[in-house]
Image (tube, rainbow, N blue to C red; front, side, top):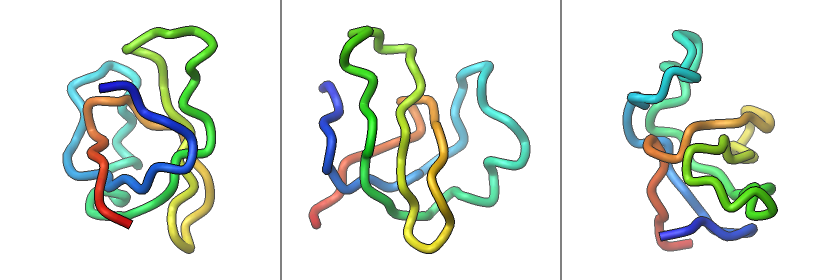
Length: 70
């Protein structure tokens, strides 16, 4: 399922992607809103920009994200 701008998501687990950095572990369990789904590339391995509640905006691999009800 492709992600869309404005969707509410949770960082629910550590990613298997090589772009996952150790510091990202602190964001597991955080909720946010997708601000840039990178749909122009149409690349399922592309990082997605997420604005996390009170933690700034970061780019995450898609396999650590899941859509939640807003």
